[in-house]
Length: 517
Image (cartoon, rainbow, N blue to C red; front, side, top):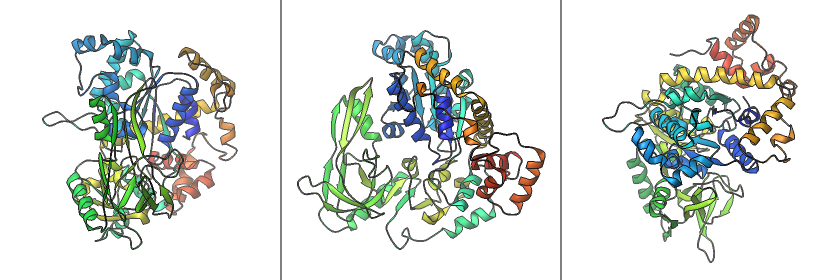
């Protein structure tokens, strides 16, 4: 499914699970949808499963928004007590659309508790009290974590709330981060637990003893915090010259400020020197850099003494402070301001989630969670940017439950794209307008709005892909098998069959040309 197809479905008000491989445009699509909802004056709650993820999207944790806090399971007493909280109730009642990012790290029990909370506060027996809920993420990323002495956490798709809301998967198939076919094949094999000898050979060739590619220092990714802190401090000490310290500024309630500080990738006390390797920790409003852009401090700006960073792409950037905030209905509850940088000789795999890196030295020898290796490797744009200290078998595995769920998500997404693709544009436009009216929003005539009538059409797609959404025949499968075994890649097969690359990959998996170990 393309981003445009998913956007069309989102605007109907359906509960959606927006997923896809890293680099497929999930974040871009959801930001586009949030902007659309703002224009339509529809109250939207933007949340995430973790503090770090919430900081990235400018929202709050789902635990904070729903009022359930650290509890996974809430009792009837808890429900009554929380529902009587006037401030919490007002927040939930006025919300019409709830977005939860990084859903892979939210356990099923917590999702069920959030759903019950919404029903109780809104006094509405519909799933999530009648909210449109949009879950965003990829279950091949880091999984939910159980506390010590707790049973293993269940994935969110195992929740009763998932079945109640009947989430419609929108599986984005386009790839905007990686264009290296060999690398894409390795990542695809990892997503199937089907890493074969030829994939290990490619990874082995990227194993090096030193974390430098001969041109620039590159970020190191480790599975444990202790390694990251040690390396960054050691490397900063090795850089000669005066160190400058930038202190984070904060306003708002203390506990919210502390939450922002814990989850902001820029530290409270940022110590830098000329020559320090740094990474930007936020997207630039001027599009000068993105979260994950790497460079070196080369100078200090006159007057402010803020750092001047030269990216590894050769661009000079005069940095300035950036804000991270927690808002509620447009009102800022807490805000921190800091230079959007952190030392980047090393970072954890966990904190790399959501980033795009040109190059990285990755140590997966001590990987301890299924999916950890996939998260680390999928940060990179190409195989040539990968430098491995080593890897273990755990780092190459993904959870079998995720494999089974993913196959179903792909199939449901294909069916949804075909159904909506066959609908007349006028009918879909009417659905969009009805949703806005039902949510108490405002119809607009802005470009891309529901009222514009400009929607995805299967006829338009077939101008480029003549066979898009047509059923596969036995003859098609036979020919696909023959050509694939002859060594033709996904790009070539897409041209031969007149279909999109995502459809080719999905068909290769479905007919068993790509199998599990």
